[in-house]
Length: 333
Ligand code: PEP
Ligand code: MN
Image (cartoon, helix red, strand yellow):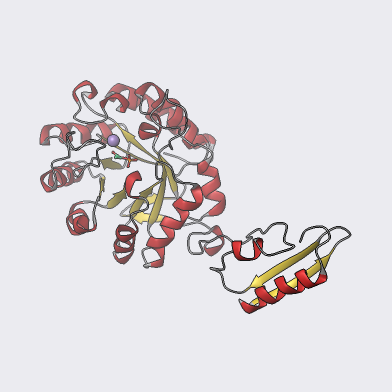
């Protein structure tokens, strides 16, 4: 309450909180009276009391998400797919081209990825592109290519689902369904993904706060799908040198606030291959449970995101460094 708030104003606030089921604890200091509301309606709009007379400020102490909060599972969630565990003692690397382009490209990619020690191959068959004139992906045919190449090298598959109608086809071919940055707040899609029992990787939206990312995860968890992996892929800031600003601090923040594993995507996080290795190393040093990275056998001719795709030799070199950083942070690759 404000300094000098009257007893009548204080009583009015208490009555309003009690009306919504709160137990009100009053503490009277020399200058301020503090009212603590416990229990009550968790969806209570704090602005209601904030704008009543005599109130100085209102702070919400509990988080607006429940199932995604660390307190729900203090030990943390481990998403297990065959023999790969995301959120456990190993840093899991998911790598491959931005888009599936052809069988030859994806077979080569599987070799590049597996030879350097990654366990998941990535590749979009349905692509969210800023321009309707850009390459949009080759669809189901691409998913089939990805699956075959992955099986040949005993890799898992991650690929993006852009729309709820694509869930069945993605579930057929892919081990992890990726929800892209542009769809982080596509609430209908999130609800549908909540109904399936398949691991999902939810990317942080281009302009989303960490709280919004966790609320989007809550949509999926509240449907009963607990196999959610989060991904920091950079956010839009006023900086123009990089495509996005890779928010490394989001990684330890998410670990503090939530039990869900989080991986870093330094490719979309920077948009430039020269910056991918340092940001990949930073993400792992900051505790990321894994990395999602773009690598292409011929990035200069890639159909999408070539500039941020690593050359195979760069990728192999980076994997050696990641191994050392994983060990330095008490994990392995
Ligand atoms: C991608 O992974 O290729 C992609 C489109 O990512 P984002 O949704 O983060 O832009
Ligand atoms: Mn891409």
